Length: 406
Image 1 (cartoon, rainbow, N blue to C red):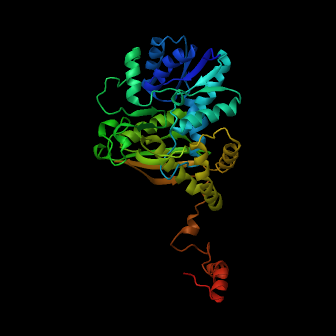
Image 2 (image 1 turned 90 degrees about the vertical axis):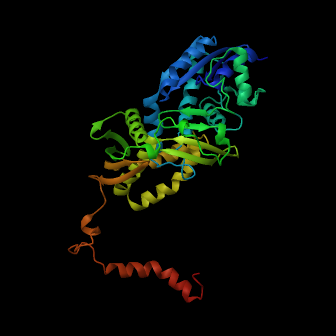
Image 3 (image 1 turned 180 degrees about the vertical axis):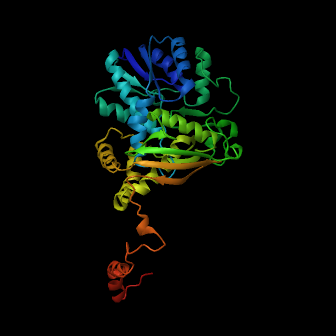
């Protein structure tokens, strides 16, 4: 059917990509190289090796990329306080650029003719993987089985698995559809099943990383997070590597019922999609980072940064990590973080992550000026009169011309 002899597949060991291995072998009569990135999915990784071996795969890449993932992708994103559509912390989106990069690198190492992924033709991930791949290797061939085959539902995938003895979870499930899950060190996501009805509440036993807020401890947990140049470098005074920070915050947040999210989002391809997410560590990181910035960032720099954030979030969500605009925005964001240093104290309690203290040697908070007590002349309140009149000048002129303010 094709001159493709070897394909590198982004392989999770789950339902979709396990079917794809066999489908590529049969459809293209090619050798399949599997690549599984360990970016914090934990127990999902090693089963991927045995499943690939069972499918006849000879070249299996399983790489521990947790530190690179958090250091070079998650941390830079969180410097911007990035949120998509006001809620989503981009846990899936931010993992794709690194996977795309390694797919291309492994294809070059193994002499593969093409790369492949398990993203559907309805989702954002197909765009993210392929934009990344084309940015890094313009002439690469990409095989996207979901856009080619006639397996149109998870039920038909399960039937394919049973026919070809492919070992996957849920193949015997009696439910309408299993949840489609994606995990990394930043989050775990859930789609499909009853979640396809946006009115239906997610089942409690779906959640894997956190207890419900109701079941969380009755006593709060206090932690102190130390920042250097916008990044968390220590928890309660203990220096940690970036991936260790996020893992620890996931554990602390999950234990206290923090980080659950149920949203309907606007996909880049045009449709609305309902998904549930658990991002315990990221939720804490975001609150803490905003807190230390509130103390150390100049007002106008902070406001401009907040204006840029939605565009930056959109760039990442839509798959343009390797684009000139993302690099430009990142340079501006990183420039603001030079003095974002200090310590934030957080209170974790029954689903909430509350900032209860912050301090920094780079603090721009001047108690002698901000105080409600006698400031000993540090701030002359009479100066406010001229300030107000000058800022009201355009309003007064307009009113004088008979223009109604309402």
